[in-house]
Length: 106
Image (tube, rainbow, N blue to C red; front, side, top):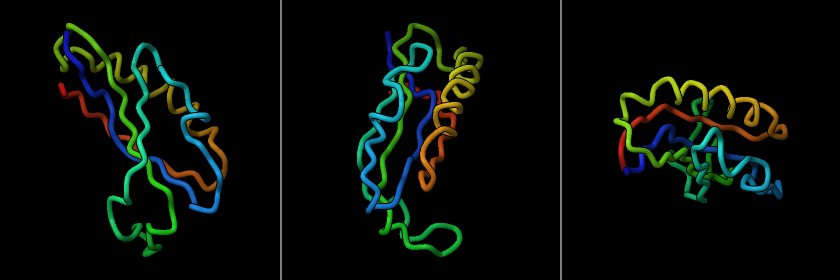
């Protein structure tokens, strides 16, 4: 049994917004655990030049305990991405996110 990251990325919202991403997103998506941890901004500015210091940032990881090889999890990762996308697109205005497929063991 090993832990494999299916996706990793960030979620952010304006600091003045009192949002709890853990309350807005499910703890599990198709068997993958959704981990959300506060982190400092990963870069000083967004692409448009806006300072990231105005936002609260969270690292988001989708983790699966499995006996399968990471490369065999691609079809599951696609289904998880589709299921999670519905939740992410339903987040309140001003909440941003970026998740990238990872498929690596921890």
